[in-house]
Length: 412
Image (cartoon, rainbow, N blue to C red):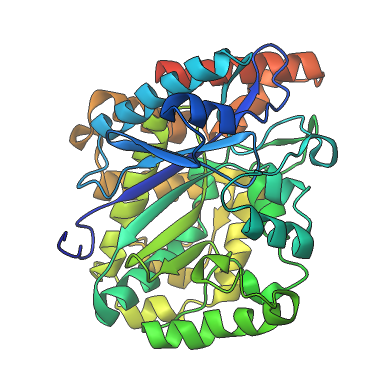
């Protein structure tokens, strides 16, 4: 049996990708065929060395994830993801399909194009669909990067949870990659999070304010966060299919079954090199807060959830140009300025916690592109320009898709 991991002794990464028609980029629900072709039989998941593959709710989405925790978020992990993406793409090509990154398909009509997974796990997906209706963008058209950070015991859990809360409000300023919905710019750079935040309108306790409430222990978490949502969904879920910790849709959720907290607010990027360096910067920021580098845990817990949600909403729309003006949040992150853009704040954190000389050249180039040229969403919008036609959008996204397989950043 593996020894339990303590804070920052391991990291788990999950990346979701769309499968689309190789020419038109229309969604292609062929995940089951790709998994079967690789495994030699019908499966819902498989292991391929350091990377595992699995299905998601929508049949046109495939997830690649580290096959267990990795000790470091380094370029070798990104290269393993790229190698597996190339293999997925080769198998998809046999069905006239290809891999497409970014957090939302830019032209998909979910009411018309959604095909739900119809194999293992189908009862759970059917329950979700019956209760919430999964033929919508917030269910069948969203691809994220999940970062899993381990803990052991209540003290580590409290430190980790308190440190994650303020960081969540800043993540769209690094990772927004979803500016289009149904062929039109939405006015938000992170449209995935905009629709994600509205997924649980029927049962608001499941998502709360997206930013989780401050808690100090597993018992506190179960009472404050899990118990209300289990109570609220019970009349709609008499079989108890969904009454598990993964029902929680907040931007970071405790996974006590594996002693980790899963951060869910990162959009998938154009290349795993970008996903990994964003995850590393996020993790280093969380580490500094958990170690009380700038302020005590009590000050982190005291940051109002509503204020952090307001900051998240600004970053969802404006990305790296959103303003951060809350004195407590800036102080918590080691800033003495009264106001900064999210881009300026992440630049400060990079210089303090993850200086460029500490990065390998590929990660350095990816992070330099994000901090210097803006989020992927901003770069996509500049590339599309004023010609908002399906043909132009498809042309740009085809170029973005090439970046996933070539391991390079997209520049407008």
